[in-house]
Amino acid sequence: MTASSSLPDDPYDNVSPLFRDGWEQDLDSGPAAGPEPWDLPVPFGESRALPAFPVEVLPAWVGSMVKAVAEETQTPADLAGCLALAALATAAAGRVVIRIRGRWHEPLNIYTVVALPPGNRKSAVFDHIINPLLTVEKVLKETSALKKIEAETTHKLLKAAADRAAAKAASAEADQRDALISEAVLLARQAETVTVPAETQLIADNVTQESLATLLAEQGGRMAVMSPEGGIFDIIAGLYSGSANMEIFLKGHAGDLVRVNRQGRPAQHIEHPAVTMGLAIQPEVLEAIAKVKGADGRGLLARYLYSVPVSLVGSRSQEPELIPDHVADTYATRLAALTTELADWTDPAVLTITPEADAVLMAYQKVTESRLAKGGSLALVVKWASKRDGAVARLAGLLHIATHPTDAWRRPVEAATMAAATRLGDYFTVHALHVFDAIGAEPAREAARALLDHLHTSPPAGAFTKRDVFRAVPRSDFRTMADLDPALALLEEHGWLRQQAPPPRSGKGGRPPSPRYQAHPAIGHTEH
Image (cartoon, rainbow, N blue to C red; front, side, top):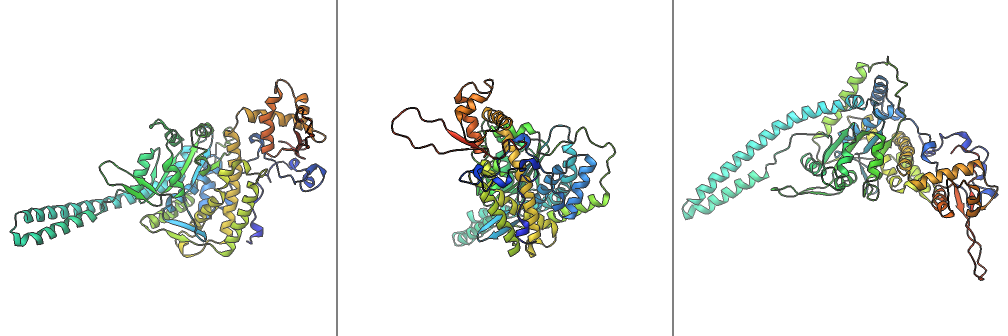
């Protein structure tokens, strides 16, 4: 696939054709567009069409399992798909990174969160997708338990030998004491160099920041938090500490240095922590976490890949096809083999990308950048969108290791894989726009929707003033002209309105003119 053919779709390609009908030609020219071209306005949450998870971009053994689980459980494929990506990240995080260009590297850990109402069999989907990891974890734990016993025994023997040598040196003649002290010191140092490993753990459920830091220190810097509930967000919000505590979750996504201080033991440094999250929550949890102090400002919300699929409750088949044994067995075997292969790696493998794959990602980056500009479709989610290209690179790495689970680190990521990752990026982009719109549903947003409804019902013929709007809108919605200000500002931010520059003042004083606005050409021609 060439770079040009891999350009990502517009997030609004799947909205009603009416959204463009009759005015698309006006976006780049014509009197209605004004001195600057109009970008596509950002719809408010209720009307945004959300795409289904693109299962077809997954490698066959993963995609087949995702479709089969969705069918048997009668759940949206989005749930199994997002969890499968998190499962791959659990296997690879902290063990594999992808190098894009120059010093730009991305780890392969991701944070996914799927919002579905109760009754959507989230636990059943978790069991099918995550259980192979738990089986591997059990085997690795048994192996690590033997290594732990061996290390503890070695440490105990060396410590006892050092103690005996020290006692012997204490009672030795002066001419023998120095040699015996040197022997005791050597044995003591050897005892201290023995590292007693913790038993292997791949997955935690609801874990505090302090416990997660300890687990990261014990598990070589990586840990996955997987849960069919949203309890981890309660912990982040301060369930046990009384205040929001998200440092480890911020650094664990970015791979920034973490310092772990444990009582009675030396401080430990985790140079490149890799935390993975695969969560399924109720939609209300998103609104709750958005209100936690610092969750947005510090960038926690920007780190998640969101999915808000349509619930199938009420339309589910009571006689679904069951997961074929060969599909489940292939998925479990390959995921287990990949996880086991990478489990003991200490130095991460570095994936490279082909020039063609780099061109695909570069094209995607240019699209992202253009949409971050004022009035662009990503302008209102700058924090999330600024991490979008990095997320696509991580997803490309995960798709690559799933495609080549035995030798991914010996071959570069190809353009087709990067293009598949951009499709996932587009999917998560539209869902993120929906989520951030929904969690920002404060009174100003409701007022903006009411005003937009009015403008669609009675489109302005040309430029108009705030006074014009106030005269036309119902007093039940806007009691004073000042009530219009937040709504007008929000519509301007979303690209539905554009404020004109005020005319030059005459210098004679008097009341300043009312602000004048232009309406987007789509107003009156689209479902909003």
